[in-house]
Image (cartoon, rainbow, N blue to C red; front, side):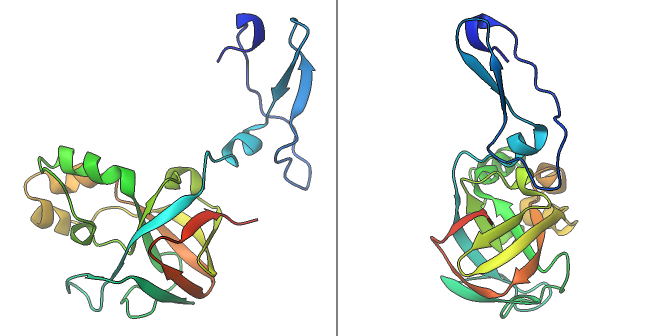
Length: 193
């Protein structure tokens, strides 16, 4: 990455204190009369270009049942009200909206509908891959992204030959519920303060 005067800018981890150093950084002269701000890896990973948005909500009333699209739902300590998900680290599943066209292309489809992929929420605008271990506020609830949600073998039947492989790396994310609340399509999703 180039800094002021075209010099190469190096990013190095800075020592972290007990509190996150978010937004503070360190400044040093850039050799051209200005200053460069050096951010720690923690500061860089805490920065998001914008908040996200809930684009779609789906409930799985029972195992293997078709998903039901709903405009709003309560989040309980065990997951979405009316969803059969297991409580804990996989209580809620999220899918990146920007990955839908990628999955469709890799599965040789013109498009893929969210209900086909069997995730609870479709989120746009916020890079969920950068949110692992991060607390997120959505509607009146709070969740923590716990890890990737690997595709299941059912994707081969749902998307056709190669569907499982098309989903690999794009299967979404699992989350645990920190604070129950209510969410609706159109609500903002953002890193919690």
